Amino acid sequence: MYKNVAKYGFFIALAMILSYIEILIPFNLGIPGAKLGLANLVVFLLLYSEGVKSAAIVSFLRILLVGFTFGNLFSIFYSIAGGMLSLGVMALCQKSKLFSKIGVSMAGGVSHNIGQILAAAIVLQTPAVFYYLPFLLIAGLVTGGVIGVLGRQILKSVFTGTGL
Image (cartoon, rainbow, N blue to C red; front, side):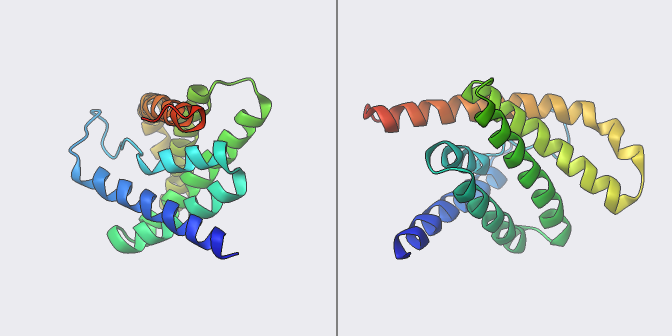
């Protein structure tokens, strides 16, 4: 049991650090609100190395902790909607074996943005937010691709023993 607590603590801390670093990096895709999603790299790595349960626990707790530390209740709601939909889609894509690791990550990036738009439509009670969706889908493909390339390389390095 303590082994799992330490493992989860390590990965939650790593995801929180990556979230904080992302706040400090002036990343601009030309789409307001679009972020690289560095913390999602930790979720992606856990999905492939430990499974859905570990990835879900770390993702959920990271979203709560980062939200309370750097955000607000709305950011937590939007992030949970995006993060949990993203993880579910990535798990299904991984399980289907129809997608490469990069494809799984891209599907996660796109579905994360869909989850956030759905949450925004519920909170704001307007379908007008869906006009923003095409731009967020492009951002999700780009950022998901970047995270997928990084994640694939880390998994390859770690599990083949070649190091980074």
